[in-house]
Structures are given as structure tokens and as C-alpha cells.
Image (cartoon, rainbow, N blue to C red; front, side, top):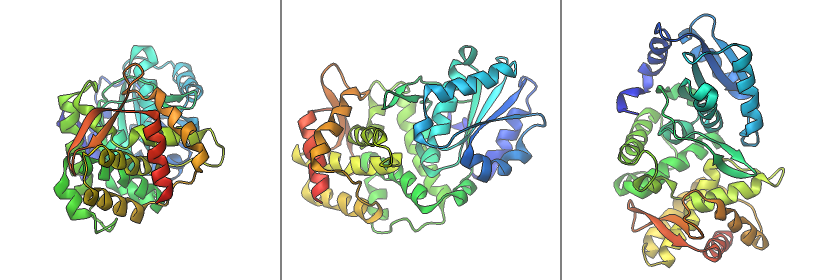
Length: 347
């Protein structure tokens, strides 16, 4: 996607309206979950064409499945949707990931627009053309790369979120600083989340991600930097998804994963003790510790066997070679992942 296809701020929803008004658009569908139907749908109705149809799915990561996709495809089919239709995905990372996946596969592909409503989706999930669903308890196990027709980011949607969701999204912002912007990390690390200028933070984060994605759209190299915190984080998130009542938000898992992977970077001599301490102090000042017991660490680590960055039996991870300098394809072992989780547990 080129930068002209991402609209941020006051221009976002008018850009959506203009795109949907094009004569080549035959039908418009809006994918929502129970939360965005209640809190966000009314904000975009003035920008939608008359006659658009709404498809609602349940809210939550546990519904990011092929079964949910089947309900979406069934409704598109029953509406006799053709290949000139547009699917507008109004929601957080679950809705944008799943909606993009549904659009990419329906009749071999219809256009879709991402309208992210959470901070996590605005700075990360909706940008870059990754779509997918979870499968057999593994995060994003099924998916395709498919660029949306546009991403329309309006920070006003953040007003509908509770503080926990804001903090979860902020983890991806911190990740961007740690892999590529040491200056921003130094500037923000003592401030916490005390900003009203979300638009500027979103613009900076999206621009950083876009530079990386443009250089490596299919994640064969440089784009793997964006997975910092995700090898251990996804393993932890996936494990807890199998434990009813213990589920955590994606950003909370990534925050824990960044602590673990920063510690692994230090253990391998890539990150000094002072930098590790700065990372740990910031993350623990913002996020409550994810609860698990040390006896679970091997079982959690085992989920990393399915990580998409792996090559054969080698688990590849993104680590830090100093603040603001991520390095990808760093081999780690299941034993090292388990030990990093034990370190996290001790803190």
C-alpha cells in the first residue's frame, strides 16, 4: 500500500465516503463486532452510502476463527455479493484481521477498507496487509498478505475505549521505538501514557511501520523486525487462550514478550544491563504482570514451535542490539524461551 492510501485524522472518514461513492462499487458491507456496533458504527454512518449492509460478529479473540469466517461468507453469499463489492472492517485487530481475510478469499478477492477503532489496530494491525485467523489455538495460523483499498484512521474512535485497551495498543508503539527509534523511546519512557495528541503518535508509528513494510512487504527479511516481543508474546497469548478465564489482550502479551526478549538480548550480550533495566521499568510501570506459574513455562514455550518466523526446527526471534536497533532471525531455543519466562515471573 502506498502512503496515499492511509488517511489519518480529520480526512479519514471523508476519504472513506469518497471511496465508497465511486461508480465501480456495487455493494457496501460493514463488518462490526458487538462492541463496535454499539460504540463506533454511529460515527461512520454519515459517511456510508444508503443501502449498505451490516454484518455483526461476536467480540473477542476467541471468535477469530474459521467458524466466524463462515458466517461472514454465508451472509455475503446470501446477499449475492459480487466482486465489485467493498467490505468495510470497523473494529480492532480481530475485526481487521478477520475481515481482511474474509474479503481476500471471497470469490478470490473483493476490496476491503480498514477502519481501525483501537489504538493497537490504528498503529499496527490494520496497516501492512496482513490478514488472518487463529487455528487450533495458534495465533494467526491461517492468513494471506492482502493490501486493503485504504486504511482510514480517526483518533476519535479512541474515546470509545477503556484504559486497558489504550494501554494494550501502546505496547505496539513502544515496540516500534525499541526496534527503530531510540530517540522516541528516551523521550517518552518517563512520561507514561499522558498524551492527548494521539494523532501525532499514530502518524509517527504508522510511518515507521510503512517504511519497513514498503522495503519488505512479504516478510522475507526486514519486516521481521516488527515481530519483536511476539515470539514469546504469541506463545503466552496462545497458551492462555486455551485456559478459559485466563485470556489476555494481544498488547498485554506483547508487553510481556518484550520483557522476555529484551532479557534474551541481554543474555546474548547484545543489550547492556542499563538498557534492559530501562525497558523493564517502563513496561512494568504500565502493565500488570501476566499471571502464570513456573511449572507452566515449558508448556508456554512449546507454542513457539509454530511461530511463523521459524525455519525448520530453528526458532527465529527478533532481538535488540541496543535500544532502537532490532535484529531479526536470531536463533533461540525452547529452553531459552522458558528461562526468559521464569525471569519475567521473578521480576
